[in-house]
Length: 334
View 1 (cartoon, rainbow, N blue to C red):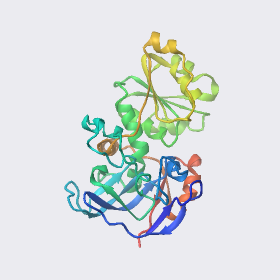
View 2: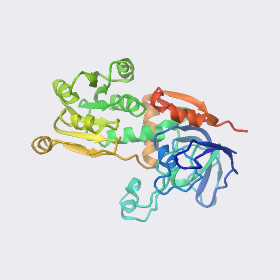
View 3: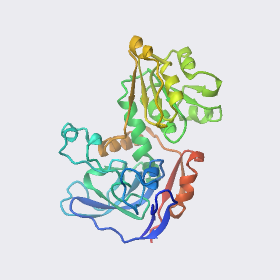
View 4: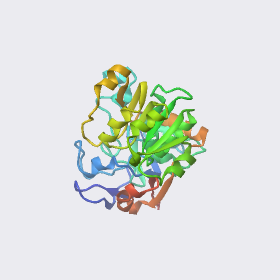
């Protein structure tokens, strides 16, 4: 089968012909119809987190099961499924026993722990799969397996209630989905981005208000709008995230889902006297992905996608900063 691999750390993706894998006990084989392109691929691409090379990247996978291994009870051939970042849990550590599967100490990451979706077929353990509703196409479902679940999960656990103000920092691959989820969850949604170029699309996607971050302090602008119960930062910029904190109303929460690997310079008085909090959110497990897909189907939420043939994975990856708003690879099955 055709696949795109990371062969050398720091180098471009390489086109390869590799054997079609066979599912072992407890595994399924998925015929990949679409795989989203995500910045997380950099971990394999740069040889990080102990990844073994060569490795097929890709963790926003949508396709259908075409083979099952022995002992598979939840799935059958022909099922439409997605596979996301979370590639399986040990089921025995303290976190798994508490139901916190995404925090498993021995969790697997698709495209790092084992080959991912930049290929015609992939193998995954049965607990890593999420069922795709019939209303979603494969190319729409794929980005929801990482960008979608991360924003949906962060918002539904944010403690914001219907009618309360949620600010979405960034109108990009994550942010354009967060705006839709926030709107459909019943929040007053404020979109934040540099410049006015994305104001129109932000409002089309459901934003009630828009802040241009180049016009001054975003925290001050949010305060003038009444303050936010939750600010969801989808942009890895520590200075911008610190400014967001000042725009939270008392009891508000800053939720960070993107990082620039720099320290946050925060005013602790905002935390102490206003009981504001800063937290992060990390993806989720397969059932979280299924919840995301079902909510998107129910509320007609869709990613804005650009599609590429699998062979153009390198071009799609390089174009991520310019994509509007998610890039999706489409394998050509022979």
